[in-house]
Amino acid sequence: MRDGTVRWVYAFLDSPPDEVDVAWAFWSAATATTLSPARGPEGQFATLLPEHGEAWLKVQRLAGLPPGGRVHIDLAVDGRRSGLEAARARARSRGAEVDLELGDVIVMRSPGGFPFCLTSWEEYGGPACQVRAGSRLLDQVCLDIPLEHHDREVGFWAALTGWDVVGADDDGEFSSLVRPTAVPVRLLLQRLHDETGPVRGHLDFASEDRDTEVADLERLGARAVERFHGWTVMEDPAGRVFCVTDRRPTTGIGG
Image (tube, rainbow, N blue to C red; front, side, top):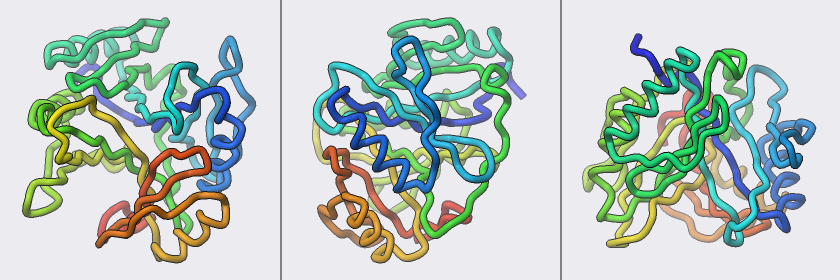
């Protein structure tokens, strides 16, 4: 195992201050989790705690974001400080930039501008047990990649994680990274028709019955935007875009 191996992935929902209450309440209900007490010097962080197993979803209050907020990911790597330094060097060699270093958290942006953090897996307690249960599971971050960044971005994430890239369809619109079984969050890479712009991200649910889950999320305050073969695009009460897919919650595949 190389130093700085990715052992866990956290999906982060970043919300502007005036949307925090509605966003955190919705996502706690939508994921059937309990919102932890707020932490951080300004009470800006919280974790969505599942009933069983270890958490992989977190929320953050962050000023300066547009309506609907954004998504970022934390890659928890092993090796403590040496692992962080190895992962940082690997990311920079592929075109990522460091925005900020805060102890055992390195805040970075991918070559196309997608925000992510490198963190210490050991400092987070070495999480290793995701329990996949229920009829709906939030387990995927989709990177929405304009054409100008697509090939470099796919190569970047494959090199940083060490995971293989597989194609999800014939026309090359989607590809994904084959994560280790123990890693809770899958990374899907979508090639947009937009020529330029920064790489963005959104969250995806796996579902046993998509129409049933869409209706339940609407009951919680979300809005269905558009239905496609295999997924439905939705917005949460604050306008954050996410999708409900036909992948199976117990495995994260299919559909």
